[in-house]
Amino acid sequence: MDMCHDWKALAKEQESFVLSFWKELHAHPELSGEEKWTSGRIAQELTSLGVPFTVIENYSLVAVLDTPKPGKRLALRADIDALPVQEETGLPFASTIPGKMHACGHDTHTAILMGVIRMLLQVRDSLTGKIYFCFQLGEEKGIGAKAIVSYLKEQGGVDQVFGLHISAQLPTGSILLPLGALCAGISGWTVTVNGKGGHGSKPHEAVDPIKPACEILLRYASIPVNRVALDQPLVVSPCTIHAGSANNIIPDTATITGTIRYFSLETREQAKCNMEQIAQDVARSYGASARLDMPKVNLPVVNHKESALVAHRVIKSIQGLTLVESAPQMGSDNFGDFVASFPGFYCFLGAQNPEKFEPVPHHNPKFQVDEDALPLGCAFLGACVEAFLE
Image (tube, rainbow, N blue to C red; front, side):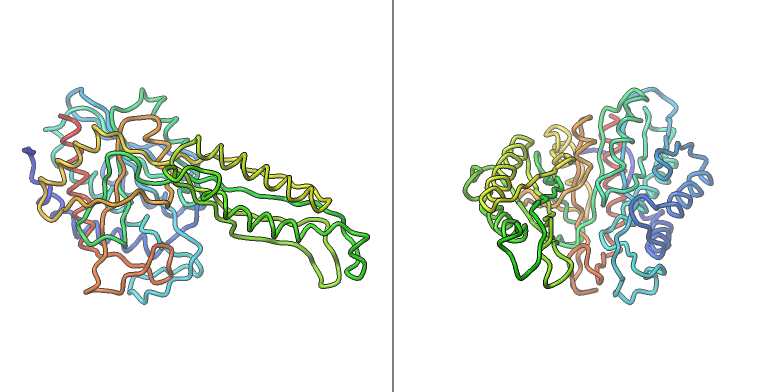
């Protein structure tokens, strides 16, 4: 793919800023829905660049770069929230806020996107169309995306939307960008088992909710194997179970919470029906009752094939980037709301370098990324802007 601009060179010019901004963000993590300082710092930077922006839901920001000539409309997204994790990296720019850490790399996404804005400002006169830069709050809690999508629709929609997520599981410079499904959808759920409380010495006078809750939990593990076709990936994860207040009191209720992950809404609905049936039937067999609540649907991230193919050509045009293949990831990201509304793609950018630090998973207190990946991310996204505007 022939490019009008040398995006690696442009990214190199922004490298010092991007790394400095990333480290500043990393030292000031904020949890989902609480990103006041982060949002303010992004706004400060946009203001200094003369880039107009709109604040959405208190802390999300959508900046817009309007070029001199009409053309296509693009949107790029970065999430800005952190996690309730106590950092243990020992880095000189480690979190200064106890119990909070950018342990998933959202700080790198924000710094990369700001670097892309600075790059595009340098070549603005050679571009066409309009570009929206979406800094999204709350991704870790599955919030923030829908409001930005609604805002983009109010502006007339966009022709393409895309973004990236840093990956500690892939070598620096590698990009996982499938032509279809990338991340699973996720739904949280709660099962409440209602019995009848009583004295621990007289279980025959009570209806114990704990025993059916335990059996329900164990039976849920069989749903992906026995109830859903093997070519429809599904994960059912009971992750908490709570009941009781003392060792001689049979409680009234027991609750189980967890998540399910899926790549189609049909699979989700089938799993939900199976879970309701199991919970009700098991509880009834003990003389108790049970209710399943699964109120929220987070969509899977499914790339649009034509968009992904353009991005593949961009990857091949930039030295230092390598396209890799892998099975779809069972992790989730509410970027699915974006690609459900507009054509586009999402990808994972590798940032693992065992020569610099011991690789650990995302959400780990020792989570680190290779800083060499950040300018590569800037170059990739900048080149994608040019490719999609053509």
